[in-house]
Image: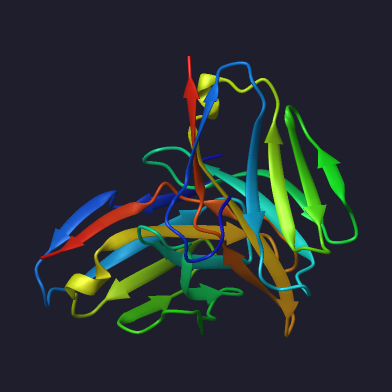
Length: 113
Length: 114
């Protein structure tokens, strides 16, 4: 049981490049989330999904897109990376979205030059 | 203690002593609270939770206290060990439109002195 797995762990992009972060969970959780973590700030929600085939915007969705084609996978895309997107990205999942703890992946350190 | 928007405070504790980490939350309607531990280079990990209808909850070496009057949450770690060194942050959860809105604090760094 691996829990929540994120790939890649590190990535360096040039401004304007695109990339996709992959998140996979093996706990049969319905809800999945993408957060970013920046110094001096709490985790901020980018996008989330309440089930296969659904996505919704979180607190800071601009510049990101997501897809949930399979229940176990949640992809985060950056179409045209900007330096402001330099951050650590965490994927998380929960069985439901009602007073549930989140299970987090180990994070992706992204630098945009 | 921590609160949303503040720089990361640091708490240094001697090994074997008790640690108390504080958190001020913002929404009096929040009905669920969680403490997470984040070790360097890793994702946050659940420690303990408490519902708004409770004042105290105990786990293994950890206790969470909730004071709704002043919107304050604390995490107490008994007999602090080197493995407890990490960033700890609280999260307040509010059910809204059938979905939980989670607000995370900025965290407190706990340093355990051997």
